[in-house]
Each structure stands twice: as structure tokens, then as C-alpha cells.
Length: 208
Length: 418
Image: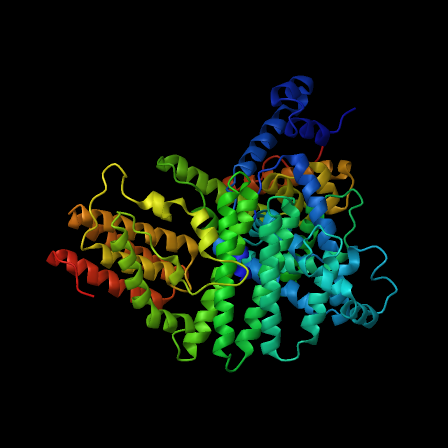
């Protein structure tokens, strides 16, 4: 059945340029109602969306549930998608962000960081391992204390690896504004970390 | 004048190294050190990857949702879909007009053998949709779906080497969707007639065999091979579902019954032929397979696709052919039963056949322990096949019992009488 098709996702090794062409072709067909094309888009983006949502929610159950919702919402909305020079990923992450916001409108942010910690590779050096664990835990907690916009720019840039052009499309802001937001977000994050690591607030995060 | 965020961006984008930036703007030394350390830490955070099982489950849910959306669209829209790409058609023409016109004219008739790159192909697809819309009972619908699946499989096989990957994916997707819809319709039937299940089983097995043969021949194009293998898997899985439906009805499945009735006779006949030929060639009779279909003869592509199983290549080295031994009949029987077993994935079938061939050769050479090991591997493979839905429990227990009989005989040192 379809399940077998689903189990064997179609993977291609393609260059970035070919990939862009292929994505716009898939988006074009999907927006005309091709479920097959949308299925391929799912294969291409599900890992990125999941990773992003995971860092927003901090637990597998929510990340899975919301990732599924993102793609269902995207399928329902894709007929209205127009390229207009904007990357598809930016649109998709916008959908993802809205799904997460909707989710937290009805629920308290309850994060369990134990899973992130378990995803950190153990390379046999106990000290380094403990260090990485501690760093990741502190960082994740700190990211969640940022404002939503600051979180968004940090996650898209450093967790997903988008460039500023894509982030600007995803957040509907000019690139200059993204650079400023990124700078402020990093300062705020740094301040929270200082606070958490040393229990005192050094170096007030004031943009110079 | 500079903005600190622009300086940071130059470092983050790799335009400047951290040291170069500090050399330019020494007043930003502390801040740059601190923030780039922080971004390094952020970039080192582990990537969270979804569980593969979730990934597939979610994709399946998504595909189901997509199909529901498609089902909600007006029937006439769906019927006319295939004509959308045909200039001069579709627009401004009423659905009934087109449907009636298509049915009434020879165009529809002439389109039956159209391939995806033919001009009449959209007409062929539209006619299929009309047939589906006109099939009132679920049983009739199942029949039309099976026919459509036959056509898609034949088209895939015919054009796989010529069309681009996109077109091929689209065809295999349609093939999978058709089979899924057929399956849904069959499951709705309170008591699906056995002849229908029988027909479905044999057609699907033929489709899987045909697709597999093409996949093996497409090794130079991995994406095509993958598509064909996917399609073959879909067919094999649906065969399994059909078996399940048959088993639920208290019948082990039409094919199993027929095999049980006929196999011994067929196997004996085949074993006799082998004895008469007095060569070392096992020459297993694939004809036992009940999967014959008018359009695709399963034995043909299968032999072409599977060099290890062809008589020539499984024959012991020609330079030193051991005499046909008293053991041969035993293993030929088992080989025939594997070859004819219904509801089995083609790859599994080939692997099982290979184990039997190995066991036969070992038994001939008097290496009974090795032969027993081959048969144990055979049984382990069968169990694995059941777990991965590549063989039914019924077939597996039947073949395991037979292999156990051979193991006992090998241990006792004399072939079991049959």
C-alpha cells in the first residue's frame, strides 16, 4: 500500500542549485493539488521542521504532534502559496511558528530537557561529555527565556542554519532588522547565561 | 560609523575572521569574543532528528489527509483532472458531455493502449475515472481498480527507462494510490467473493514480478530502481492484505488451497523430469506457480531477473557434475513449493530458493551438516519474512514443516519417502 511508498522515502543526492529547482517544481505541482509532490516536500523538510519545533517545545511528544500538524496545515494552505522570490522553507517555518504559538495559547510551556541531554554524543571522555551536557542544558533553558522574536532568530540561524535572506523572508522583516535583532538576541542570551552561570548580572546587555 | 550588529554579521558570515574584526574595531574586543563563543556553543547544540517510525507514520497520516481532500472535490472535477493538460479539452466543456462523448467515440477505445507520453493518454485516464464513477457496487469498483492497477504497472514497466524521474514517481504514486483504494473497497465488502480475491492475488503477484524484473534491469539508474522496487513492495503488501482478508473468512486463501491440491503432483512430475534428464540440473518447474496472468507471464521476467535461480547458474559446476542423488526429489519438491508459494515477496522467494539449492548441492556431496545448516538458514529467513510481511504465516508453517522433514531425514541419513 501507500505505506510501503511512505516507508521508502525518495532521497536524491543533488546540488544546492538542482535542489532549488526541484523544490520550486515540487511546490508548483503541490500548489496545483499534486499530493505526490507534497509528499516529496515532506521528505525534504520534515527533519528540519522537527528539529526547530523540538527546540521550541523541548519534548518529543509535542515535537512529533506539532510537526505533523505543520505539514497538514501546509498542505491545506499550499494552494494559496505564491513564490514571489521567497524561499519555500521560509513560508514553511512561518507555518511552523504559528502552529507552535497556537499550541502554547492553550498550554503552559512545560519543558523537559532530559531528552536533549540524552541526544548528546558520549565519546568516551566523561569530563568533556559532562561539560557538553551542562552547556546544552543551560543553553536550552536560556533560549526559552528569550522573547518569541529573539528565539525565532536564534533558532532559525543557529539551530536550523538558515541564512539571513531566508530568515528575513520567514520573519517578514528586512535583512538589516534581522541583523539588529540577531545581535540583540545574542546579547540577551548572553546576559541570561551570565545570570544562570554565575548568579550575578555582569555586563548589562545594552546595545552600543 | 559602523553598527555593532554589522560587525558581528561579518564575522558570523565568514567575511572576516574574529581576529580581523578585532583588529579593525578594537573597542569591540570583549563583546566579539563573548558573542562568537556563544554562537559557537549554539552551533554545537545537537541536532534533534525525528524517530524514523514517527517520520513514516506522520507521512502516512499526511497522505491519508491528502486523499481525503481529493475525495471531497466534486466528482466531475476528478473525472476531468487527467484532461487538464490537454489543450482544447476540459475548459468550457461540461463533464457529462466529455464523459458521454469519450465513451461514445472510438477515441476512448483507441486510447486503451496509450502510454504516458502519448497524446491520447489523458483520455485513457479520463475514461478510467468514468468507469470508476459508473461502477456502483464495491465489488465492481474493486474490479475496475484492479484493472487500472494492471494498466499502471504495465505503463511503469513500459516507460521506466525512458521517462524522467518525476514522471516515474508520479506514475508509481498513482499505482500505489490505486492499490490502496482497491484495498479499502475490498475491506468494505462483507464477504468478498473468493474468485475476486483469487484474481486480485494473481494479478498483483504478476505486477510485482514484472516490476521487480524491470528494477533488477535498472541498476544503472538508482532512482528508477528505487521507484520500481517501491511499486513492487506496494503490490506485495496488498497481496498480503488480500490473503489476510481471505484468512479472516476462514479460508487459508484460494491459492493456498489450490497449491495444496496440486503441488505434490506438479512437484513429482518435475522431479521425474529431472531424473529422466539424468543431468545435474535441478530445472525447477516454475509453472507450478498459480500466478499466471494473460498479460504477464511471471516465470519469464523472473528468470531473466534472477540469474542465481536460473537452471544454468544453479547447476553444479559443469566440469564435475555429481550424479543425481536420491536426495534430489526432496529438495526439488521444496524448491517447487517455494517457487509456487503465493503471497510472498519476490526477494524473499529468491533467497529461500537459493538456500534450497545450496542444501541440495551439499546433500549430494554428502555434506549433510552443511545441508542442515542451509535448511536452518531457510527457516530463519522464513520467520524473518513473516515478521516483515513478506510471507504469510500459513505459507511459512507449511514450508517450515517441509524443511523440518528434510532436516530429520538428513539427520537419519536417508531421504524421506514421499
